Image (cartoon, rainbow, N blue to C red; front, side, top):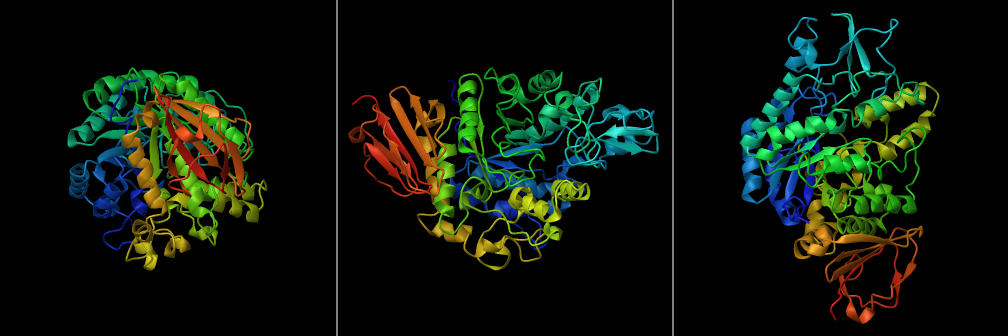
Length: 562
């Protein structure tokens, strides 16, 4: 398997609005990121994935872009961006930009021109359709609730928006749109950025028949078969690769809703014709249900193991995996898969990190994950800021599908805002995030969960992540070894091996708050193996039957040459 820097990197996602506020306006900014660059260097990460910092009216927290070559005023200036990029590069940290090109803001000049007249040269930059029987052109629902079509009285037509009404979808069928996007990407590459994370990139090609979808519980049609992994998506990405990506040494990762293994092999093929890797959601959707994410269902470990194992094995030597538990769209993993009680929060956070970081692929850490930050006890609906959560609350409660008290609990468990509260830097007011009033509430547990305390304490979650990152630099078996699942039907333990030549790892993770036991496989003899890392012990001799404490993780190392 060919070795490349992006396979050997650990990526850290920054949500700029919530990371660090340098000027006291309550909103994180670029200068705040620059101020914290030494913290990231100490953690040991190689790449920052920066959520959008472009000019935006902020209907969807920056994922609605009104100018791709300008910086949102709340975040600073282009000079601030250049200074941050330089500070990162000085510390050998690369910067990957979030690229949002399925849609723009309705305040982008292209769309304002497009909606002005049917004869506008920009009309075909977006997807406009006539009414059908006096209603929307088809029955698709949007990802944020309601219809995916918005009527525009100025020209008596509808435009498509797969997300918010203020996020009209670009028409990738138009070669001029593709040229504009590729020129913009090239501009950023020439500025010196190191790659792109591509937002909902699997949705850029739509079935041009725009057929009705199967009716879902929301009352709207399922757009998935006609929008996700559409008919020309690979053609468009190959064109993007030829014109822009292949000319630079970049990390590229595509967010691919609805992706299958077979599609993933095309997107992230090792021939390099499209992207380096993709984000799939199969493991994150295991606790879905009839109301999609809005429930309190827990992911079953056997299902999680089966899903992650499928991606590990079926992409091996064909495409590259991205590894993640958390991002700006997911609740905090220690509250979801671990145990956020005072007793078990740290050990379960370390166990989850071990389980993920020992797999094959490029790991992604979301800001605060390295501290074991938790979900947030939001007191009222007024404290939420996420458009998806607020829309869902009103849609499901007004339709009578979910009672208000139940829906509020579901938001507290699953809302994206759990990941978006401010980074907890220290135990001073507002967790050291701002001297002003934060744009969203701070998790009240910042007084005992914060970076300053953890950097100073050797056995903290922070230092454990630091060790995991160092191990990836020292052992090729973690990067390039094959993966084999053991005990697939065990509901409590996640155990797997990694093998590269004569080197082997045995990864044992207890996903419960009960003590468990694991009998060593016959080819792992206690006298020949070493504990590489563990979240309870640093040097624990192996035994024929290993006793495991609640949420314990151990990684053993052996070579087959004795």
